[in-house]
Structures are given as structure tokens and as C-alpha cells.
Image (cartoon, rainbow, N blue to C red; front, side, top):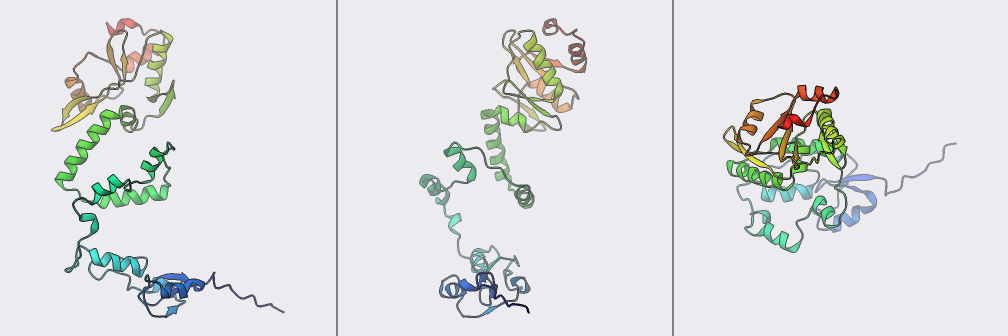
Length: 270
């Protein structure tokens, strides 16, 4: 004989027929009495996705619940009676910054000296899709370009590490090296007691009518030489080197082979 086991009301999900929100049955009375509901004690066990009334009447955007729909329609850009959004007020963002409220998970981690949060692949994919749909004005593009130039100058290591292409990154003595050729040249300098550093200063150059920033691969302070380890040479590389204000030594495949065969010497920089 089968014994009937009732399902607890905390496990049953129902759909409010007024605001189309899904709630557990045990919380439905509380939901009905709250301001979040559009009022009216009606519910259905039919899944919420069976309803199509959660689409904005102006732009047809689908929302998760009635609260989200109401809030969106008030400020929808296609709404002829649209209310001004608080986010559009002149000093809204400045006031948030002053009050310390305009923080995200990255700024909070920085304030608390915690490691940067790691985003899941799903979140990264969502951010990528959202970013691809954004339409930038010319003013926004110019502002973004100015900010990125400033960031690149203040964080040269992060800038170069993010533009490494297909080259594998190796970390030696706390320095990020891009590809095996840089590893070989760096190791040769250390073996020959040659002081080698990553340049901290970026150098401006113009390419395709835009001002960009170039960071040479290495600097040898003992002989006052900058070094670029380069495999495939492009027109953009030639442009970088043309505008570079200091003496630059280009280490190519031939020099790497000499390092492999113990034939490379300091005379190369003379």
C-alpha cells in the first residue's frame, strides 16, 4: 500500500496572476499584502513562461516579473510619457562617488586589499554579448580612448600582458615574459651579468591617424639600450620604431639562433 506524502507549501511554486511573479505557496499571502504585487489574491500553478504579458508594451522587452516590467515601462525610451530616470540627473553619479556608494566587486576588493574577483565563463559571455550590442557615440569613443591611454601609461605591465597575442606567458623573477624568445634573451642577460629591466615608461607614436603607446620589451641600464625581441615584423612595428626617441636594438630570429648556439655576444649592441 502506497503512503501519500504531502508536498510542503515551501516547495510549491505558483504564479501570481496580477504581477506574473513566481513565489512559493507559503509566501504567497505575504506577497499579496506587500506593495510588490499589483493587488488581488489570485494565483496559478501554470509556469510563468506561459504568459506573454511581461513584455514591455513600448519596446517589447521581456522581463522576469511584473515589478521589473513596471519599473522599465516608466523609464522606457520609447514611452511617450516617459519619466526622467534618476540616473540621468546631472550630479547623480558624482554624489554616489562622494558617498562611497558607487562601488562594484572590483573596487570593493581593492579597498579591502582582496584579490580580484574571478568571473565565470557564463558571466564573461553575457558581458561580451552586452558589450557587442552597445552603440558608442564619437564623444564616448574619444573619452574611452583618452582613459585607456592614461591607464596604459600608469600600468605598463598590465598593458603589455593584455596584448600578448598567441605567445605564451612565462614568469621569471616576477617579470612576465611573452614567448620563448623573450625567455631566452632574458636568461642570456642574467647569465652574462647584464642588468635587464622592463621599461616603466610608455612612448607615444602615431599610427592610422591615432596616438598610441609603445612599450619596448627590455631596457639595459648598464649600456643605456632599449631592446625589442621581434619575430614577425609588421608595418605598425616599423611605425613604433620610427617614432621611438631613443636607440633601439631589435633582436630577431638570427640573434635567437646565436643565443641557442652560444655565439651571441655583447658586441651586438655596439
